[in-house]
Length: 152
Image (cartoon, rainbow, N blue to C red):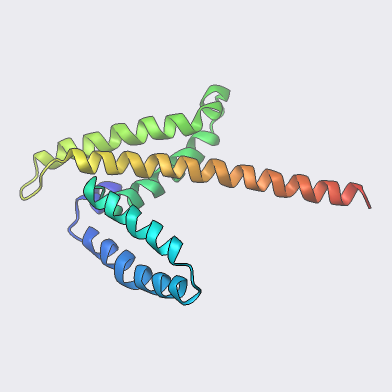
């Protein structure tokens, strides 16, 4: 599935969605609430992404793969795999992404691209950062709730 999504020509639809359906409405809301500083940050970030040739479609696809790999490794019976599930998710996902680019070199009308491989890596790393921050936030919430219950 990841291979199909990353080699399909429909990745441009994700770019269109991010720009037209999500980007402009968010920009308008931020400007309406006098948050132009945030708008400028996002615009500068998007320009950096364009200059670095990072493909948002690949980032999104491999973000999802990274989350799935993390939970796959987290559910392992091997304690070493569980302990290093984030690192393994990035390594295995990156290996898959590189192989995906190698396979594309042999497909008609497709080109292997280091920029796509880098976009894949960015998606995998962002997924691990997201999962770890989400887990830390949940721990903090449960800790606060537990303190609230014990003090009653």
